[in-house]
Image (tube, rainbow, N blue to C red; front, side, top):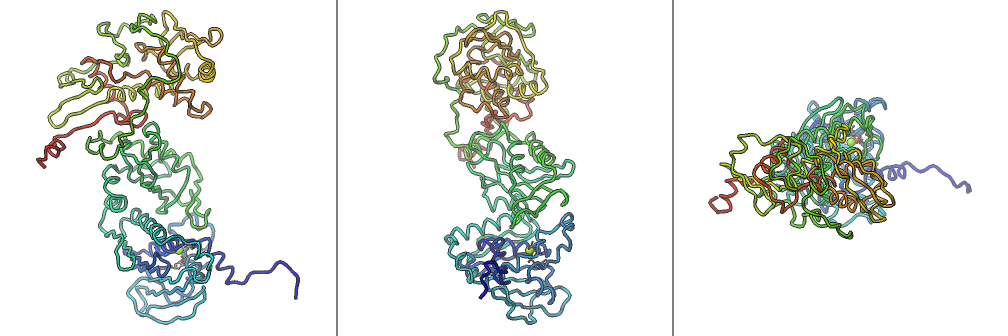
Length: 589
Ligand SMILES: Nc1ncnc2c1ncn2[C@@H]1O[C@H](COP(=O)(O)OP(=O)(O)OP(=O)(O)O)[C@@H](O)[C@H]1O
Ligand SMILES: [Mg+2]
């Protein structure tokens, strides 16, 4: 006997090992078989499973079918009709290309395949066990293909042992089928388990109807369709309003050229679009279809093709972010009924409260005189309040807006009464949005209008606060704050953003420093964080009284924002109560 340690594996062992990569569990079989049916041009695909796919998986389609020779060849390893050469991947328009799915499935199951093309008289039946063809004969069938996979992993007990509970495997199958339902609206899909129909998407169901059938009305009814193309990329799909987000990412599906993928850059691009619109720990629902020339994306980087690699990631990201962002402008204010359905009561952030952990330096109320701001002549001197900081942006309200009935209630909400609806705006959230957009734009263009203080304001900081100040003093400068060291742990504010000329600037800066001390100051987007905090801290608060002109002007400025319906933390700025909703509430409907 030879004592060599290394030997070449037998073919059947190689086959089983290779199969392990493609066929992890019953759901992978469903995925591969359905992909083959889609590649074959089917517009009706029926999937039947028993015992969550462990006893049987049957996929029947009405696609182009296979000739007798092709059916036999299809079950061999590395046999495919889809590519001849590796360069064909650059022109790939099918889901399959490796020529290994059927052979891999056959290697770990008892599989039979019945198929007929539109032109041949007789169809063909092939039966395999452990990848070996045991039977082959002519068989009748209408045009199309049926593949039946029985006793998956019967010959790989280790795999079988690792299968999860039936309910888990079945849920995974339903997941896979959901992806197809959502991404191929022209195809009818049926999924049955035993004699129970689990999912059915009729051919004429539209994209959004399919999303509704998969994710429910709560998700679908708060989505907007989007579509745009930029350069090499076309991005389209459905996305949730920023105010209708979820606690988990389950309602997110990304498809590249019809293929479901996971890709960090793609997902980053989506979150980038929602940046400043999402509350912490909330996620948008997004069904995204990205189309790109196959030469721009590598689909051959993962055994089940779940991962892809883009040649030009920045261009891809710009296209995706742009496509989603563009549609935000078209989104309507959130109807209040819908809000109640999607926003949990615990969402109100602690942002309004006093900053904890710092001794509050006593301030007087007459802010402008105390700090001696040089007052801009454009601003009317009457009724100057802390709250009218926003006026400094400022055209005054237009005459027609003034005629509308407008009230402040609860010291916090601006209420407008129209013929068809009552619109309620949260004054703090609205002002925060206005300031955030102003600072984001002006800081980006280095055009923040600064204003010198006649009497510089002195800040005496704690050790912690002065460490934070050292790190962010330059960033403050970008927003129009001129702050200079003034001895140990003391600073003077020489100039401030003109937008904040009526704010209690000491308090604003102290509050920002306290907030920043709980942030990671080294992260890249610290500038955005500073803009968010400045907007939040400088914005008018709940409880600040507003006169009519102030309310009108704030609403006009909000209207000019590119994303007027949420504050930078993702909370809604505005709710509509429609007549329709009142009728429902009074049970007239
Ligand atoms: N339902 C079907 N209808 C018609 N032809 C099919 C069907 N299923 C498989 N085929 C044929 O069998 C071939 C092999 O299928 P298989 O899934 O093993 O490989 P592939 O789809 O080419 O590549 P991949 O391994 O990436 O899926 C396919 O190229 C196709 O020609
Ligand atoms: Mg295939």
